[in-house]
Image (tube, rainbow, N blue to C red; front, top):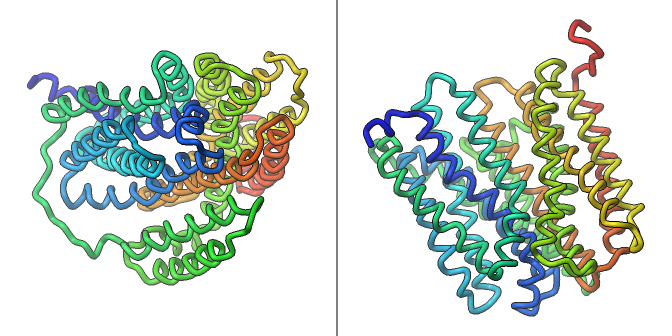
Length: 451
């Protein structure tokens, strides 16, 4: 065991087992939504809260857990996160009602959000040589588990039931916990400072986002004006709070100071809104409209995930040679084309045409993820990397939350071909914004290395 502890790649593997839990559980739920609708007698708008609450809890939890990791020690927080995820996964299959299941999802998100910042802290401190390679491997853990989550979820639900997408976490958690005990470096003494936690900022962020979700989901029925008021008032109090905090939950000063970085955040929010509309919407459409089983839905979703993974290395090579702007533009155009092609998909269209559309959308995701992150780091100073990374993740979560609200609004009463097209039309508008932002960012789309 001593030799294993001295092996840096065992450290990376141990942390990777933990950091993959958040993206894996955020995506496996997509194939389970139809089952859960029937299980708890829900509309799709109700079921969409399983998406929104996970990302809302992740958005609030990750920066807080990063600070708690600094205070209590990375190893302690990493192991605490594993325990929290284990508890949520043990309780969720026995949920007596939908509210209890939502609470389990929130706990799962908070626990898994603890693992990334504490894991990154240990990598930065313990691996001094080939650190970039270690971070790249952890990124593969996260991106691969997120991409293939629907396929894994489909096979598990088909073989057992929706409870399997929670129980599958337990072997990973047990292995990760045992390895963490022996492999991870010991934490330093506790140094707790409650003043570093922006409690009011977090509460106002959650209140404002919850108000926005409730307002959007009510647009097709009796509009909840009080939810809009909650969104606005919560947003104003949040702004005033963050403006004067030394360690704010969201650093609004950096957003105002660095326009280019802010444009990347806005673009990435739009990208995730569009992509997750498809990522969560397609499995429900395939099951409820096309009548495919969970296993077949999981297989079909491989087109979206697989092409995303396949083109990522190509996007990386283009970035190395020409910078981030060209691959960002390519990703934006592919997203626009894929969304446009989705509008041509009809009831009589063959499955092959749907797979082609998904492949184009998958390729766009492969380009967009890596180019947006690279573009961000091109426009921030090295000492601001930590803050920028946190805001980048927050923009991903906000886009994902909004996608759940859009799907809940459009799929609430009836799901058919025309409602899928309605989602595509809304997404097409956001695609145009993404293309425009990719052109607006500084940097030349060079034809050769020397120009």
